[in-house]
Image (cartoon, rainbow, N blue to C red; front, side):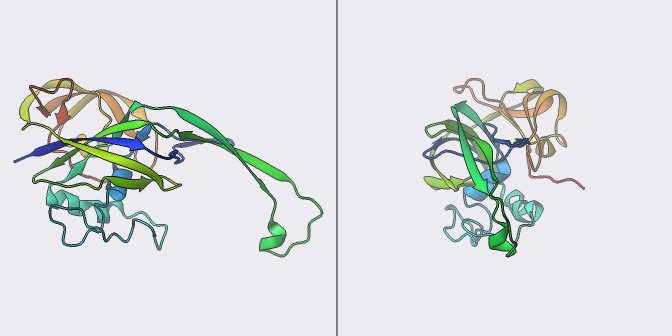
Length: 235
């Protein structure tokens, strides 16, 4: 039995991560990657996972090494029948923050210096009270945390979950307006056209027209979700 939850994420702090760097400008795209959501929701390294996300998560507050292990961390979710889609903006505002710093080589390397040359950068962040939407597909009932933290500043966000009615399936040409991870969908559906959202570690696609099998709901309009999505990785 497939269960689909529609989840709303509301920011209580400004959200920052560097989707793109343009000179001194570091910009945050108003889309949240599904990899980031899996870590923030506590789905990674959850021991004895049952129907409640474990509170013990070694990657929630501290990462001992800066080496991505997406395949190692996300493959167990495929075995459990759990999939999280990327989150799209329902409504958002952006704010621009300027930060300054000075040359501090004399602090780090004990170098003598006669100059103190300040520099600056700008960070384009997503403002508090912005809201996002994503879907959780599972084979059993799942309870997500009400509060999570995500982004470079560990920004606080509130999660609201709605369990959708049992989905129906159909095989046809359809358009998914929700952002998708192309690696997770292209192996099981014939993708015809899409818009690219450039962001690391895997660029996302949206406004996707594809041929294949998908979920839909009689009582929920404009929601069509591709079937058989799993976390897949480049060879």
